[in-house]
Length: 333
Image 1 (cartoon, one colour):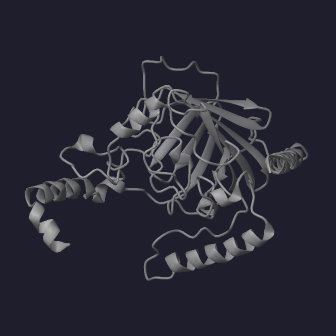
Image 2 (image 1 turned 90 degrees about the vertical axis):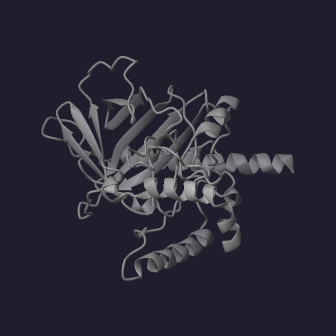
Image 3 (image 1 turned 180 degrees about the vertical axis):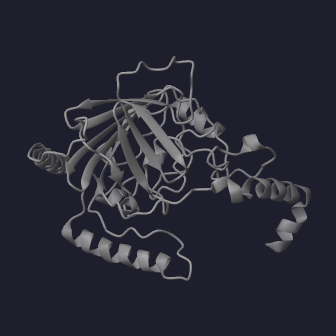
């Protein structure tokens, strides 16, 4: 049995490797468009609605298989179609449509089982200290510090800002000589990335989304981000990401994220993100990978989260009332 299992894992790994080779070959035989100043042209709108049906963490039924087989894919297509019709069918759409079904079984490609890696003891300590409305066991809300930055409409942070949600999945890329800007529909982020060799900021300067520096390796834009300063305020919260193992995933301020954007076809960018945080992740890192598809007809809307956000006040009022009137809650049940 052990030899059979080992052989199956090896076969799965070989299949993934062959797929990677095929993708690399296609990219090598295709010449991407260039900007007027000679860089590979990544400009355009690249919404990731198609990833709504791809879970962050792989269902255990797929093991180490990065893709569904034909029967699984046929069933998934029907399920996604029904899901889209359900959420789009009312007078007011409840969520965006995925639009297409991917064969990909998870956004996480490393570890090979597609599962979120275990945490270190320090990571578990950080996780226990995280606060926010997505922490289901948290019932006491008394002050702003009891909420995450996501609750407060400040930011989703990284890496989660480059992961899908059920709506507002627009990503738009701008370029100018020496800079790339990644505009995110949710939540009103604009990642300004120097590609002109500008020196990094001092390590003492910390930012919600970290500090990014980019460079070109052939036709690939490589973006390295450090100088995170969120601590337990946001961590790597994956709130709302389909297939998340849980919304409170911690990160240390030593977090480093390396992204690779490679345009492999007129309408496709292969995107890869490696998240390194040895203080928090037992194996030290995990990797996400997915395709982005060009759709310049996609309309990005203002994400004016805070203009109508009464959630913080309502949580505090409700929490205080429930604690002051414990009998009423029991009677209602």
